[in-house]
Amino acid sequence: MAVEVILPRVDMDMATGKISKWHHKDGDKVAKGAALFEIETDKAAMEIDAPADGILRNIVVTEGGTAAVGSAVAWIYAEGEAVTAAAPAAAAQVTNAATPTAAATAAPVASTTTLNGEAPRATPLARRLARQAGLSIAAITGSGPRGRITAADVRSTEEAKPAAAPAPAATPDPVQKLYAPGSFEVIPVDGMRRTIAARLTESKQTVPHFYLSVTCTLTTLMATRERLNAAAPKGADGQPLWKLSINDFIIKAMALALQKVPNANVTWAGDSILQHKSSDVGVAVAVEGGLFTPVIRNAEGKTLTTISTEMKELAAKARARKLVPSEYQGGTTAISNLGMYGIEQFTAIINPPQATILAVGAAVDRFIPVKGQPVLASQMNCTLSCDHRAVDGAVGAEFLQAFGQLIEEPLLMLA
Image: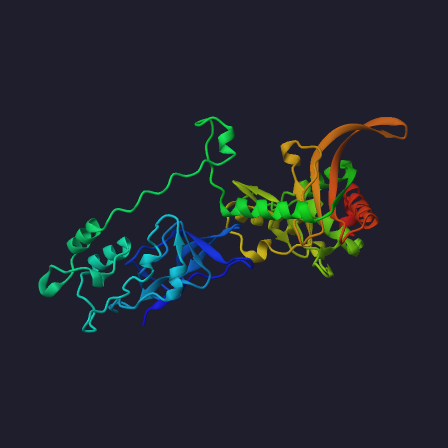
């Protein structure tokens, strides 16, 4: 009996999924566990494996199409098994931007019984063409031997269909009307950008933000980083086994500061506040068209080299859109670092339900007074955004003070 290929839920908030790629086409032989298709969510592209061995048939959601979670998007038949199973009614929920007739093709051999209860005879190619055209095999008159339906019969029936009415002219967008035609390019908003827009708009409108800033002197941290990197052992390829970045120290300092000030290690839960035991630090990673925030779990208990390795791996997966939900969901705080772009100071928007996010600027050389004399030092501005519903000003200040102490004396991170 044919096995349904179900569109699974790969994200907590997911109600529908978009199939961005099929690794096999209708009629291909597939093996259980092999990558079958990819789902595109607002966070990542997830590969979905084949649930059984057999022949892939009746793909009802093509690349670019969407379907409800839990609905069947194709079937896998045993070799030699007759393709007679009809798609369930749930497939009618399928929408497909690339193929407007996808809902019609959701029942690949629906209504395949004739008045005498027997399925009409048709060639495999004819059945495939009928599915693609959204035609019922039972409604086609066969011209082959014993009334068998051929590909030519399907094409003739399709050509005889009345032409679809032209789509009404689109009403010009009110924003587009402000600009001269041809002076801009329209870029469709994808799922990731829609989610970013919705969540951050909601955050800025509903979360009472306040901001605290601190300037950290990096002289000791830079020297410590240089010594640790110089002491890194070499691997089999002759390359150092680690290369710590300033961001690795920032992640560790954030995690330890949350442990020192547990009242800041919280998330807002509506009618309650969750105070967390571990420090799970999210780090914003810019990708084409948006950003991801993978999370370093239990960062307070990890070494700088472990944090560095994990962060490199997560950033690479984020840029390839291969993160799984467990790698980006949750988190008790977050870091947004724009220092590599030369931005000296900025504020970041909180990502609910988290209650804090740290905006990190570039390291800048400045003269500072030391024992009455000007000394050139590298300094970094950090601005903490706080949700005043969960974190009060004094708590935020205490947390940022603890963070600054750890950054300026990094050996405390190793104590």
